[in-house]
Length: 307
Image 1 (cartoon, rainbow, N blue to C red):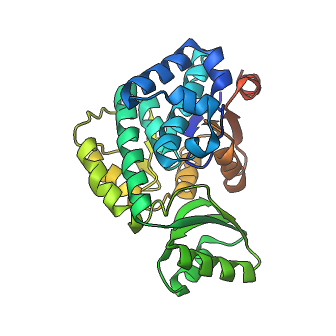
Image 2: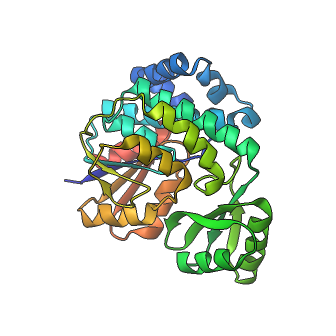
């Protein structure tokens, strides 16, 4: 019997029409978008299904869009009887994980992501920044180059043993990329509006915490792993402070994956657009199963493996 973790996708994985097949497969997936539209106050389904990409890629839309797609995938697999004992998300994916674990309701989940996305969009417009994935170097090497680079640039996403994302001022990121290129690393700019998970988002964290303080948080029904801690979260007494900190803190995804493996989890199922996290699991952990669900084909494949 497999021991399953549900993983929830992060920002940058979005694409136009990403949830359309899931929407047509599942009545509960439809309800996810109905709830989203009601809480957000606009037609998220239209933005997700019809685009244009330029609109979908705006932070204020991409975050709730990815969350809705992830939760639609969650509903589709749950309807098929797939059980799970833990959840984790990458960056904004933690909010879908909170809903899936029962920590917050669907309605409150979308209230949170609406406030987070709007606060981060505003901060991005006020603080120009950039993010770049560095592939082929250890996190220690990436941190060393950042420390030696003039200006503000830091490691913010510890994604796999050979992939670390940096963020900071545009000029500093550019300088760091030059050095990484000299070291034969591959660098990929991320499709995001600014330097997320860095101090350039502090104004967003300060604004967002006001909304978080109005939300009721429950004890989750399954194990919940935290980006900020890099381990299982066991105390839920100060979620406003933790979620505000999450906006300006690194995503310790490698540490989370290693902790889940140590806890005996052997099957990692990514729910949401694209399969970025599935690839990170493959690069980080040995002797585990990794699957993704984002459409009818991937759902059928996952069910075949899990039966």
